[in-house]
Length: 317
Ligand SMILES: Nc1nc2c(ncn2[C@@H]2O[C@H](COP(=O)(O)OP(=O)(O)OP(=O)(O)O)[C@@H](O)[C@H]2O)c(=O)[nH]1
Ligand SMILES: [Mg+2]
Ligand SMILES: [Zn+2]
Image (tube, rainbow, N blue to C red; front, side, top):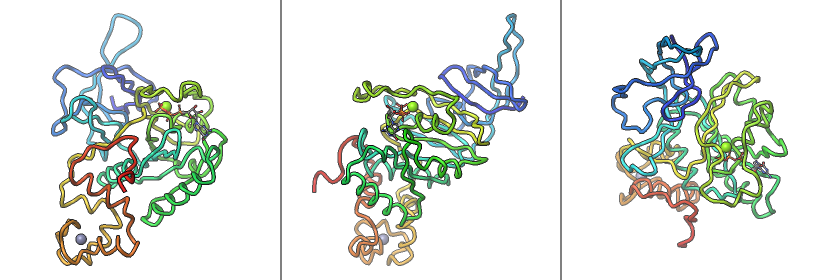
């Protein structure tokens, strides 16, 4: 049978068959995916082939035999096993990043790593600036600044309030007939936004009183939901950082669209935009066409530095 993985709890997978029935499936011991060193061989969004096992009890269970080739996937580095990766979700049409200026704060290095990952796998990325109902004048100015920065590069940016249901219709319009993923730090409002779109799901969200407790994730597993607007959404647990793996140094600049555009004017066609003379990216920085925050993210990924969560990249200036 064919189906799509809707939920994974580590050892069990909830798979929706073509006829709409959900089956609890597991994988056989030796099952491995070639080429990917991942802590989870099967991810939410995967298209799989599975067999129904005859069981004594009433509910039939399935065994996943094969995963169809993924059109794309979003990964993060595993928290403990440094060399391993964790596939957050696969076969995504649009990846939405929820960004909050405050409570919690999202830094540009995090945004840029997300965008690089999306570019590398050719996934349309949209930035949602959430909680606009809570911001001070200064914080709203920050939203405006960042939205303009990323719009200039070509990314769609929408200011929203999941709680006050502001601009939700704009998000819905982008989601029609597609598989979307909501991503972002813990507490940015991913589950709240899904509830705003589909109230009947009534997903668990963080209580206000719990908000300041660090390291508490309300959503603990990625899960896909069918929405009545005619779309699928994958809710994901909040993540601290995106690992950018499998990207060669020479390729990295291609995943910063404004660097890629400038590169044609670099003196060397293999310019890494670091030490080289007559570099159009560095000229772009000087004349204000390219944002310094983007270049800092670029250098950080290039050097393979770990992301410093909750550390402002400008704090050394
Ligand atoms: N004022 C305001 N609060 C919001 C908004 N969106 C979400 N919140 C609140 O932020 C808190 C966290 O929201 P969640 O939806 O649980 O966040 P999450 O991104 O799903 O978090 P994890 O599941 O831990 O990754 C909750 O108390 C929400 O009510 C918003 O637009 N405005
Ligand atoms: Mg959540
Ligand atoms: Zn250059």
